[in-house]
Image (cartoon, rainbow, N blue to C red):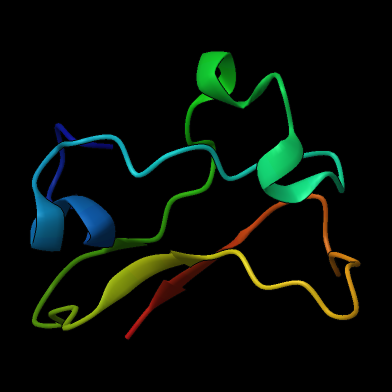
Length: 75
């Protein structure tokens, strides 16, 4: 997609540095396979839309994660 007019919101705001892993199999930051996996979740955009904030949300509720992926947040 990078070769078309689509852009990735995290890279637009932070450069092409790695955002960190986003999949974690419900283990959160304790996920031991994380360094080898890398980020697998992206938010693409095109046209006149411009992101103003981009981050990976790693929140847990009472020690439990609502998904096996961290949330990719873009605003």
